[in-house]
Image (cartoon, rainbow, N blue to C red; front, side, top):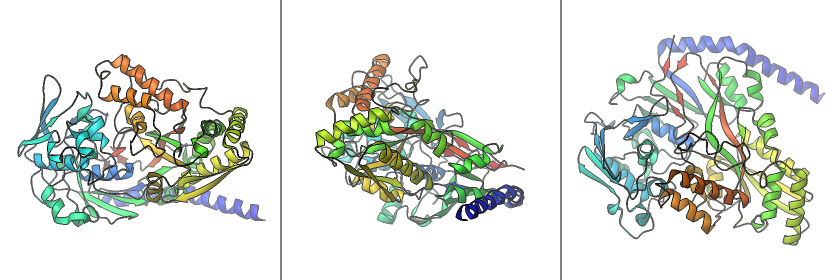
Length: 550
């Protein structure tokens, strides 16, 4: 009887989804007559709206909605000026000077000045601010003196950025960085109005009244941990004529079934889907799938948990997981199984070759092989002097991550004898805090590309990087990455590529992480919503050219 009732319930849900299509189109068309306000799903509660504090990709999107940097990402992925009007680069590529547009203003009417960029970047490296993305300024952008400031040996005033005058900002680099302009479109490098920031103090970014905009939209409704928040067109934006939308209303939804029903009811214009919901709509012409640029993986706490310090146990775990089954039967959004740290279609060498062109470049250290997993597990038990192992697996409370965690739990327990996995579910922000504090055994997490180079992933595992929750350390690996990012290999692209591949091989061999899948976004998009651009690097969704059409 329970099975019959469940089948009837699922049938009713499917029918409600099927017949809601007309209602959706009717509601969307009616609303379109009144305004250009779109309604968009977000999958995470935001961690912060402070550009020098936020670390969630969801927050980056919102911050980019209401803030412009010196540069911006075009629909085709190229870079062009935003707040910058012009740029000069020295012959040695170590000095970059930008002239600020005279018509760029903050939403309180004040002009955007060179000092806004100086103040913002100084906050990013100030040890007192403790910004997790500080390495974007020091190790990636190679801003002069950034590392010394971060480690407390120089004052923030010595950072290699200076306001030559009100409309001219100049950067001094330690070494040439060919993709420097693209970094200036990322929130870490966004400006901050010093006077306004000091007037609101620690409450900055907690409400519309404690935020300033110089971008396409302004925040009109927001509070910390809000599940609904709104932005409206910024009339003072220098490029306001380009912006066709009147605003964006965001809603945080963790459950994709609820999201699909909201879309079908006409309450949302764009949603993300996973799992069974994709099966329902995959043939719909409004179904879209695109590369999200995120690598999802298991991170072992190999410093704080004795069992996971054992290499054979880490290998037993990674060889137990069937990644193909995971993406095809659980995730089902077009995501690809991952067998390396750097995802495919991210970075290319001078000949146009993909850094991760091989689907499985490390078959001896990662793959699906239950028998080999059991052999490694038996060795681990003997080396640890135990007959059983119990570990916690920490996951986000989103429905997909819970489903993935449950599959991994079942797989490990059925493959490895006397191995128990306790599934711990937490909100993403809490999960992040516990992970950062080392309060975990295994954790399911993701990393997205901030720029198009292998070091956006490989740089995470340099000794001391705050995003390596397992606190792994390898001196040879550190040397290879350092030479590739700021040393002698920077000017030798072919040798640099080889060094980065060698570094990845070292980390893979030691099972620093257990790559699972390269995420795609499966989305339903209102057919009247045009012009939203999707990117796998940096800001994932940009709305400057979006419009609701007839």
